[in-house]
Amino acid sequence: MNYIKIVGMGEKLPVRTTEFNGMTRYRISNNETQISMAVDAVQEALEDASLTINQIDVIVSACSFGSQPIPNMSALIHEQIAKGSSVPCLDINTTCTSFISALDTLSYMIQAGRYKNVLIVSSEVPSLALNPEQRKSFELFSDCAVAMVISKDNHKESYVKFASQKTYSEGAHDTEIKGGGTAFLPNMYTGENDHMYQFDMKGKRAIRLTKDKIIPFVNDLRKSVDNEIDYVVPHQASLVLDNLMKRIGFTNSEYISIVKSHGNMVSASVPFAFKLAVDKGLIKRGDNVLLIGTAAGLHINGLVLKY
Amino acid sequence: MNYIKIVGMGEKLPVRTTEFNGMTRYRISNNETQISMAVDAVQEALEDASLTINQIDVIVSACSFGSQPIPNMSALIHEQIAKGSSVPCLDINTTCTSFISALDTLSYMIQAGRYKNVLIVSSEVPSLALNPEQRKSFELFSDCAVAMVISKDNHKESYVKFASQKTYSEGAHDTEIKGGGTAFLPNMYTGENDHMYQFDMKGKRAIRLTKDKIIPFVNDLRKSVDNEIDYVVPHQASLVLDNLMKRIGFTNSEYISIVKSHGNMVSASVPFAFKLAVDKGLIKRGDNVLLIGTAAGLHINGLVLKY
Image (cartoon, rainbow over all chains, first blue to last red; front, side, top):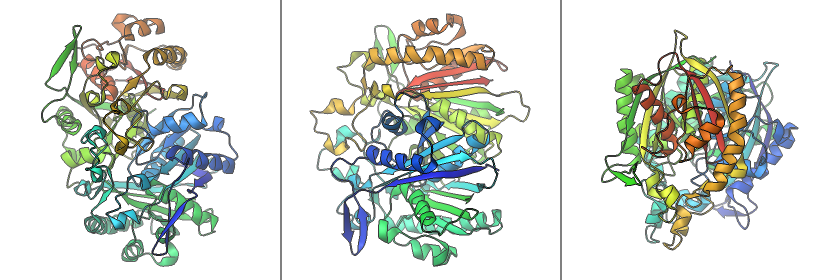
């Protein structure tokens, strides 16, 4: 059992909002950047944990996409919050479920004593790469950053009860940004092929594959934890969330749904919704909380945390 | 102690070579891509391990840069080698030392029993983003892919003896690609600002910081392993490698130097040089091998593997 505890949480939503059919979406403006939002979230998380950056043993970027191709995102966050120190940092990426993957992976390093205090940061600015002609995705995403401090729980009250990931790459191109990497370089940008560098969502295909795979995934997971799930924090992937949760077998009061009020905030969705549920008293210490999501890949990640 | 064993290794060098002052560099051409090279390396590694992809429990991309911004690199590798399966995959990135970070991180998950057989892939095509006006870096890099299968060692003969990482972000911009992420988007490419999307190396600054930091890092590491290091596989960062290794205190026969014959192959350098040293009989089962490198960040990663 990996005994870890969330000891600090911080968030940053952009100041600017926009509305689509009564749904609020957050979009960076002026001097806000992916990095500046990450920094704001980190500062709040460290304060909440009553720790300074010098007490952090590793910084983990759990973002789907970085501020620069090189160096990696965590080094650029490090530069703003830890320059002059030697605290190590690394990036862990499973697109929208990166936070769950980072929590899962680092829980082993904490349990083994490699690191004591871990800072995980998910910062996303999807608004920069949306295609205005794809209304569904254009009106779905929000920018947001969340940071969490995870520590070893010496009291053994908080721990990862279960974690699992599966990847179904038949969905690799259902949600994607084709251009910008080595397959289709930035220098192939012409202006006319703008859409190649924008987010492309084949919504129906993505939802069909998700439905096919997530129901048996959750059924298996439930068995693994003897159905001991008090509350669910799902990735806010799309507006079909409520329908999907119902089909999986969760009632409205069992999970948090903020896709209408906040949208899909990529890797920041799960930790943001988690923090909100704690702030609202929907999650209490001792609860078994299922963090679950699907991500471009298609990845499915599930982790049950005794909070 | 994390008991893990390298049970299979595979590599792919591009067919095309070019020469600079008698130094060979490898560059992809025709139908070769970052993904195709990864696939070739994986197939060789699986054969070498006498395993099929169905026996792999997780696929880890340990690349500095991906084929697409979304989905993540491991999902795109998964699509070519594991489509139809549900084997999970994730990306771990510390730029040039990504392979060491992935080996280090996954060793905890293997030791704890989460995964038994892990496939780590480092595939890089730096030739696509070099600036011909920066001769030093233009003539330094090669494209290459390496894959390794790592398994739990039930005989407890092979293990990670020690691992450590430190990051010094005062060097975050000494080696970088500025454009292509959210700070400077692909759609800001004009043709005239090509260099913003190319690799930029402030060589002297990078070397100065490396020297400052790596000597005390290795001194500490040596103490942690009671000086039990039989052979060293350094990242082939630059032509000052021999000079640097001498200053650290390693003689020519104690480490592998292929920067003249192969160049800097980014994250593929360390696993490629490791494989070559094994193939040449320079590393034998039972040896304590130090994998060490610096990476854009600046990260320093060191791992002593009882091979």
